[in-house]
Length: 195
Image (cartoon, rainbow, N blue to C red; front, side):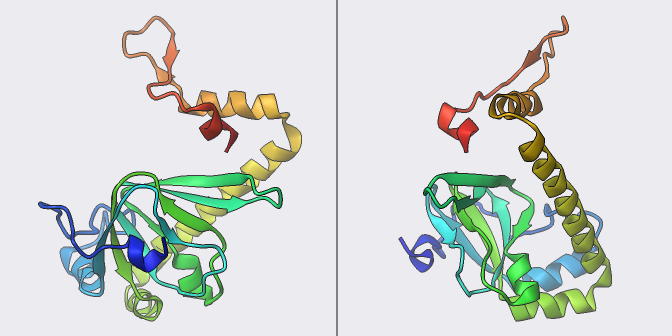
């Protein structure tokens, strides 16, 4: 289904139209948040739908208000490679809004999701008027670059088995019952680990 068909203007009953939970706005005044919310269009997108595709030239910025989305690309073999899972409170699509280039990855919903969408020119103009939000976005970019650097080192220096072990260790949390055990509360399927 094309993106226009995936994004639906009918929101689930009780949906609160707010992006305050986004990491860019935790410390911002209600007025700063409201200024961007007033620029947003609000959509619901069912699980498994493509939000945008790599090489798309549209440049809206998306705020994931509720749900889960996945950022992927495909190897020449056609194998899907997941870059990250995006949880509620995150932003995506901002790279194309800033550099006016095509999308660099495909994003689709993993769960039913609520999205606030801002046209690129309006988002960039908003950032120019809100330097504190722009600084937080720059810090977000720096953090992403550092994480990608670590992943590149891991991919180039670890075997496939070691990378799987590393992913499983990142998912593990200490057992609240104690005893020195660690648990993975929601074990992914083999395909998820491979991606």
